Amino acid sequence: MIEKSNIYISGMGIISAIGSDVSSFSNSLIKGKSGIDYEINNTSSNFSKNIIAKINNFNLENSLKKITDLSKKKKEFILHISKRSPFFIQTSIIAALQAWYHSKLHKKKYKILPERIGLIIAGHNTTQNYQYSLYPEFLKKPEYLSPRYAIQFMDSNQIGILSEIFNIRGEGFITGGASASGNIGIIHGMRLIQNDIVDACLIISAMTDLSPMEIQAFRVIGAMGGKKFYNFPKKTCRPFDKLAEGFIYGQASAALLLEGNKNIKNYNKPYLARLLGGAINLHATASAEPDLKNEINVMNSALKQSGLKKNMIDYLNTHGSSSPLGDKIEISAIKKVYKNHFTKLWLNSTKSLTGHCLYSAGIVEIIASIIQMKKKFIHPNLNLEFPINNQAKFSGKKSIPININNIMSNSFGFSGINSSIILCKK
Image 1 (tube, rainbow, N blue to C red):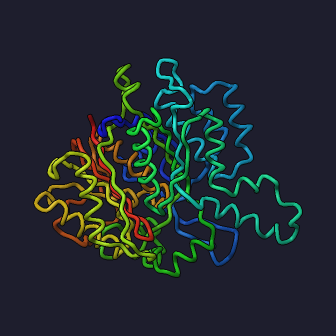
Image 2: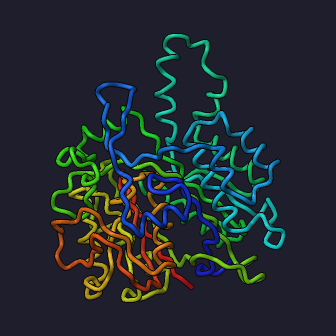
Image 3: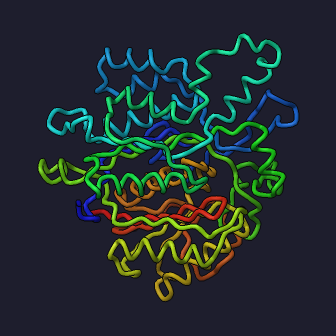
């Protein structure tokens, strides 16, 4: 078994509302650029102006051209296998390619046997809007339903497409945990490497493609915000602010490449960050309500795994979804975990820029955390005008220069699913 601390992040990729790759995403974080705005939706007049952080102007062919190390033959193969895939799968493919080539696994020097590479799709129920869009035509002419739908409606379709693109032949599966899915995928990737099942693991958090039905359902249960500041869409997502009223839906596909010692130590391969610990727990509920005790427990478990003292954590990327109750419980849990260090611990929420990316939120926020650690800054916590806690060390309206060595990142999901991850620079 590999030592738990020797898990490295060697590559990352992202397609989001504020960046179509790591570089543009990084620039948006530094500038505090929000991707939240109105969406003109022609599906129904009842949903004509949703407020979301939407992926705009995505084009598969143009995105492939930006990955300069891709051979012409490989590009043609990827286009052939994926051109007729739904939009959300195409974004997963590009995010995964970015992470793969960022990690340099395509280089002969760092090559790993296909049987020693794992693949995890972090997210579930990703085909909601795809199914919704096909249904009206199906009612009219069911016999014309595309035969591809038999495979494409399954989340496992992404396993098949991505394993074929990268020739991955090790262990592969899907992890689902609502908004904790991204973190859960990372933690299971760590475990695959720690248990010597694989030497590397590609983890892709699929874009959550909500249909108008899911959007309406979130509104009905009071989880989704946007009413108070409807005329000012960029002000609607307000993590840890007294005027917050619910999350704002965001779109993103994000990917990480995890590796053990094989390449990192043997070939002195550069890496982005080291994963020190990750924990998951449940608080035994079928509801969407958060739980103070179990959020405390999951953070303490991650800290124990990491071997770090609480005062060694410089920055915490919160779940911070702009939910009044969720934010209140999380800040109380952080305060109880960190005690005297609470007022010295930098906090922010990436969701104030990206919206709540739901299944992909965990990986999106790990990428944001790594960027901040490497570039030595904390991105803004937008719309924090009336903080729910005046002792907390929230970032402000602009980026703040700071040296970060150790990070905690939280993701909590409906049905009582809690997760926390710790990573470090060296």
